Image 1 (cartoon, rainbow, N blue to C red):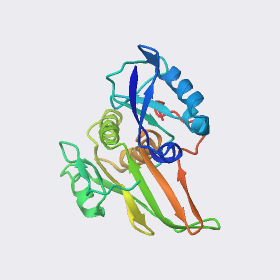
Image 2: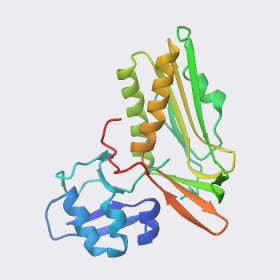
Image 3: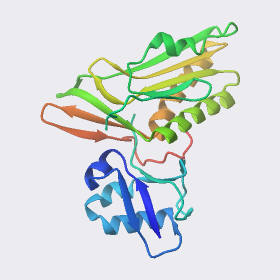
Length: 240
């Protein structure tokens, strides 16, 4: 069985390809078995493969999920949130969620959640920080598995509406190069009352960092590093 596996961020750099053609003698293979085979075949990337999740048809796959040859497969390393060469601006059908390589507008994103019956509106703005301790960042570079990332952003919006009924949420995330003090993500939330607004906004950014396949590379004067989930064992399928 020949599998075509999409790779991102540090994995793509380590294996020097963004699409890996991998042949296995099996007619079907579980997600966990695939990770074991890949780790054995590519020992130089084994530590990163072991903490990655397998996505099948743009959904996170449990370890016992059976993968067939015609599946769309991606190996998702720990996320955080590549630079695209073609202009990118991909939106959900309702326009609330967007991934783009263009500069982000707070007014534009916030306008999507304004409602005559909502008395609270919050906009979270994530920007590039220059100094982290003694380390100076020159700029950031973001890469995304765009179709799955957009679907995961929409899922966050639906989850928020379930937890806080009636809440409106819009999220725009930038990919590509983001310079110091420039905006990488905007999350706008509106609710009838401020307590729900604070809670929903916090939930949105934490869930985005946990589950949305967007990767961040920190570029310094003397090197660079892909940054991923840094809060213990990574499980994008877990509840916050």
